[in-house]
Image 1 (tube, rainbow, N blue to C red):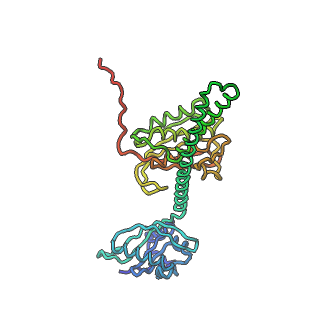
Image 2: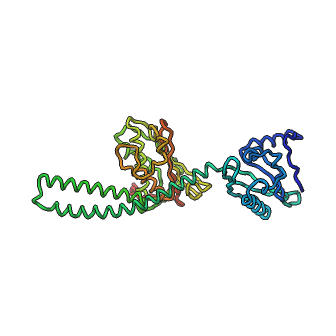
Image 3: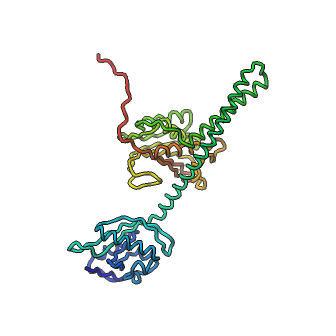
Length: 383
């Protein structure tokens, strides 16, 4: 069975055909049909625009007439798979076109005649060039931060050993009774400085490996509702928390997730010294496709939004980098630790912001398989 190619400018025999013609030409999908020899029987307007050739030139041509040999060979192999499997198959394709190299997710399918024999193949192509580029950039950033984490962990370990040695000697020196006056004061100052250095080494280790999570299954609701009271108390910032019933539990280190929320809330509080609102929202989220190095599955999505001045676009891509800070005071490790802890839990965190419209931090945590255990409590005696 053969399919008659559609000629440019032909008039449809009825309104239904005209509607289908308009529909296929108005979509952003690239759509085509080919016979079993690989000759193009139909292409829509999107195909025409991306290929840079009019339909009259494309129709009747084969892949090897239009594309480099390696690309054309790949297309013919895919067509053969669709024909032999007699079902739709999905492929990711990167194709050199006049407008540049573009990437697509293509669903290729067989067309069957009334006897069930395959007589043609077709394709629906969705362009993913921009999404793929963003995913590659995000993956590069993740790998870079992981490399920095290994480096920071090694430095922190050696640094902490040196500080511990100094602290030991200062402790011995402090036991000398004859130390008094300026000498005693300088010794006390040295001990304080070493204590700060030790705390810094601890922060570096937390960034490097997130700390070893002590995981258990727990509900996020109480943690989300309690975190603002600890961080925002005494400030002019008010909180709004939306943690609905039915929220999936997570299998995580509750202390570390509390630290993540605390760091994000501190960030929001410092962005709004004159006051404002920070909102926390949690919802169940099913990830159908791999995204930002995350596996498909069930997640809980938590967002923390403030209405401060926002994050300038020039630094947005760097805010999770260790020791990067736009503030005059601060270690520059708060958001790095957020990133490290979330990644160690199998999740992902990202930020969005428009100058003058606040900042939005979103992180995903894998949902637990079971429900959180009930916490033991005292039973009231029956009267």
